Length: 459
Image (cartoon, rainbow, N blue to C red):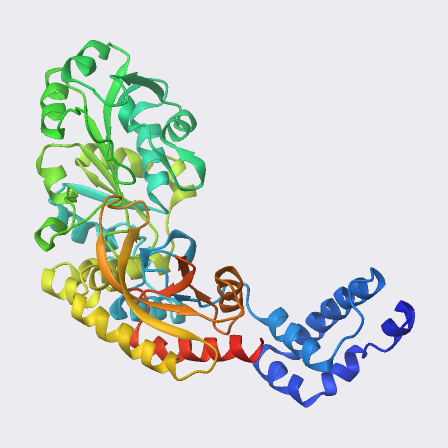
């Protein structure tokens, strides 16, 4: 059929709006959104026809494209990858208490910057500062929008125009090609590298100290490890050296944790409390990694330094909003009783989930998927990942639901699952698509089965 004739056979927007299948979309997303989406779908179909990419268009395809078009761009997905702190999927999930706190904060006016006792303007940091100090042992605390911002603010406040000494082995790169030297350059501080990639000694720091030195920066290597012939100066020794020269020490913990995970068989990570106790003057860490809260950059330390950061004009550009504060406060309250944190914070529950529980969940999903025609399913052993640049050497044993669906290869099956409603994000291993029960919930098992039904129905 001639291309122009095929274009003329496309339905009009008004005709699409009269289809029964469109009524539910209008009810869910509003008429205006559906109208705009229908126009975009028709425009794309015209382009495909005129370029010779297709020969026919069905009403079912138009509806399918329309459903895809009206979906919000930020969608719920099912994380079946086994990566607990998956940066691309939003990192930490919030506890039920934190979710309720956010709901209250967005549905009502709050005392975000209002002192209820005096009736005058208050300070938003006061809502979480007491909790952070209580949990960390620090004199003062504040919060900005992420840990990179926390490092930027601290360096700009304490070291702009002056030198900051860092071990070469700690000049890490975090997500999105964002590097410690870049953050330091932007802050106005002058980087002074000491030691070598694999070995830095106390004398290296001492020899680099001059009248231009503002502070010593220690960066915890939370997203990689150097093994073998290595040496780094422990934090307490750095603090002792800095005291000789009346210099502050700053430690960027990266992921940051209030719980010693080595008690549970996971790799050792320095906690915020022990870092503060070691005498570090300023400690920065993330809120949405091992802490299991919202995205935030948390700063704790000596009052004189934190107060200077609060007064820095840059702080206003980096401050957090009421939703983040609400979620962070609720998360921190869970940590007042460690057992409560382990029970209620999703990140901690996933990291420490017992093997038997993972196997039972995997077998339940495998049994349900096994009843579908056209796929082969088995439960195999494997490993999950912590993710989020935390515990890079951690091996989290798990049980995987391994699926093959002939004639689809692993790449095609992964792509089809990403197009399901809701999308399923899985991973491939040894020619199979695997689903890790560590990162999907019991309530999501029926949704996973439905996703495979959609894939099989679509061929």
